[in-house]
Structure formats: C-alpha cells, structure tokens
Amino acid sequence: MKAVVFDNGLKLDTNYPKPVPQKGEALIKVVMAGICNTDYEITKGYMGYKGILGHEFVGVVEEINGEDKSLLGKRVVAEISYGCDKDDCEWCAQKNYRHCPERHTLGIWKKDGCFAEYMTMPLNVLFEVPDNVTNEQAVFVEPLAAACEISEQLHIEPMKRVLVLGDGKLGLTTALTLHAQNLDVILVGKHQNKLEIASKQGVKTELLENFKIEKKYDVVVEATGTASGFETSMALTKPRGVLVLKSTVATGKELNLAPIVIDEITVLGSRCGQFPPALRLLRNNRIDFTPFISGVYSIDNAIEAFEANKQKDTIKILIRM
Image (tube, rainbow, N blue to C red; front, side, top):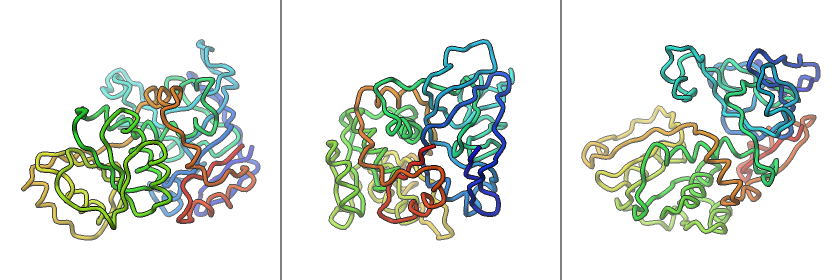
C-alpha cells in the first residue's frame, strides 16, 4: 500500500506492508486525512518518532477482528491514543487512554499513523461519523475534540469573559468551539484574513495591534505556542482568573512567572479530548470548517502537500487517499 513515512526524512512509500488487525481491532480504509503542525514537528525530531505519520482522518471499516461487527462498513474517526487496558490501570478504567503510561498514540508514539491507504485501530476508540457530516468536516474531529476538552476540564459560567489568543488552526478552532457552546468569547490574533473566518461564524475578533492589553478576562486561552504569547496571556488574565495552555510553549527564553503568583492565576494545561461532543457539534452544524481548507492533495502528491503546509497563509491541508 501507499504510505507517507518519516524515517530520517519524509518519503512516499508505495510498497508499505498492509496492516493486519489484531484481536479487538478494525482494519480501516482511509478516505481523507489532515496535516497537523504536530506532523511537521515530528519531521524536525519531535518525540523521536519513525513510521507512518498522521492522526487526523476519516475512513471506512473494512474488516473487524472480534465478535462485535457493528462498525463494519461504517465511516469512522478514532481518538488518537489507546491504552494498555490492564485491570489495574486507573486511566484505562476511566477510558482516559491519553494518560495511560503505556499508551500508543496514532502517528506520534509507537503506532503507525493514518497517512496511508489502510490503518488499524482498536474498536474501543472508534466512533461512527453521522451521515450528514462530510468527509471534509469529519477530518477536523480530532482538533475539535481537543478544543471541547477545555469545557470538560473547566466549568465556565455563561457571564464570564473568555479570550482566545492566537489565530492559527488551534486558536480558530478553540474560539469557534467556545462560541458554539454559547460563551462570551473574543479571538485576538495578528492576521485579518484568519480572524474573518471566525467573525463570519459569529465570533468577536480583534487584531492584536489594535487591542488594549488589560487584566479583565476571566479565562484566557493561550493558543500561539510562543513565549511572547504566554506573557501576553498572563497580562490579559484577571486576578484569580484561569489561564488555559492549549499550545505547548517550548522556549529557552526566561519567563517572568511572578504575575501568576501575584494575581493568583490558575494555569490549566489542556490537550486532547473525547470525540462524542465534537461529533455532536458537527452533526448539529454548529461549526463549519470549510474555510479552513487551503488545499486538497492526493496521497501521490503528499510530499508536495507537506511543503504547502509550511506556507504562512495556509490553514489546513488535506490528503485524499
């Protein structure tokens, strides 16, 4: 089968072995997948991963190794992590596989990803895609679920003021999600064309260069992934407010964390989320990801797709299998 493989370089392998589903797994024919910034970071050495890339996809179940055949022939998406499922694992008992110490993470850690014609995943992390959700929308379930995770971790009262800093894929998705949950949210970023994607769906937006920095927001979501963004987020969070870190800020720069102590700010790390809430938002047409799509490439042109993903004006590149 064809597969996009990273192993000391990125290449399209046209003769990669087709996977065989183990007990409790499904064989999935991938229909469409999306390139994430994490995929790009892996090509620069992140996680030390080697293998098939990709973790955002929609596909059709072609084979099931197990008694439950209910998903056979169905369109599905998959939560990206699965755990050990041992009886004494507290995380697997809660179906919170992303924190299992022995987890496998699709296309990131110990598990071949979805940039291939076929893949396998355990049945317990697969979810059927509603009939009214297109493949192009379904590809966004994983990042949408990550945005939904904020409201799972933190109860935000309807009258609280929420600010999302950063207008990349992560910031846009987060702002649209919080808006869809009827929260008072404003998205602040540096790119008018990206902010317009959110404003056209009802989100209040503001260019950072015109925005007054003051400590008046109850919840601030940092989605820039930069040290300066983190510092600005601290300057926007009101005393005893909550600063949500939605991006991983990796920097060698010294940071002054005194405002967190002085203002008694709660810092909340937020990563992946569960898929059912995200699928409900898509099923109910609460968010439209069509404006995110900057290009669709065939798997034969996957390397070109990765190059297109690097462009500053690109939001989301999809790969059609």
